[in-house]
Image (cartoon, rainbow, N blue to C red; front, top):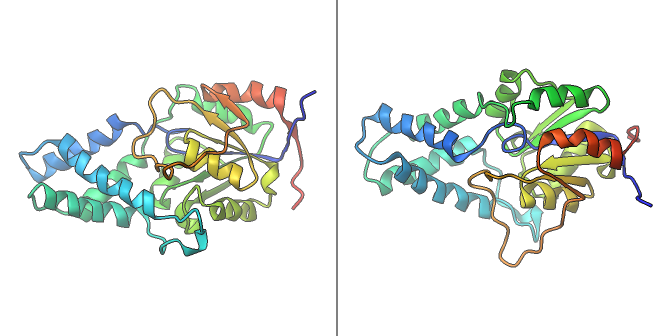
Length: 256
């Protein structure tokens, strides 16, 4: 007989889980950056140069073997501007790296729902469950994308507000403190096997992996040889959350 976890809150990743974060959306921003500067360069080449530097940051920002020894926290805005500076130099062009980073931030703040019925699904789930967001994001694009789509959550925690990035267990602990829930009372839903699922499981949460046909670009690569903790459940679409909750989860009141 299945032992159903007692869940007090359903918590979502944002980009790639609730809101679009595909390659096409990112490339559109780079097309506009090149157009605004009047450069005769390939937006795709600029995107590749920038992505190489951005992913390099992701691989070094957290020491999972010793999280307390991780480098000082830096926001995406800071890192993305620095990545643009390096990409511009590599392509022998001069431009406003800070403005380019802000362009990406503005685009993220108006991303559309990942699925056509995402908003309706969230509203339906919210009638029975407290919903929250825990996202690797700066507040200046996480809060706008929530407002842009008319979404409402009981708790919203960003990597910027927590000053730490998933999959570091400290960001999950910070969320639990903010939301007044215990880790084992949380069902975390995300699309990244490393940042979302491995991180949530490492922190003592239950986890749902949404399998994506178009994975989010620039995901944090797991360390070589790292065996990832597995999700408790896997689904192919957000609309599968309601039957999953009905069949496999028991509602629980927060004990904090």
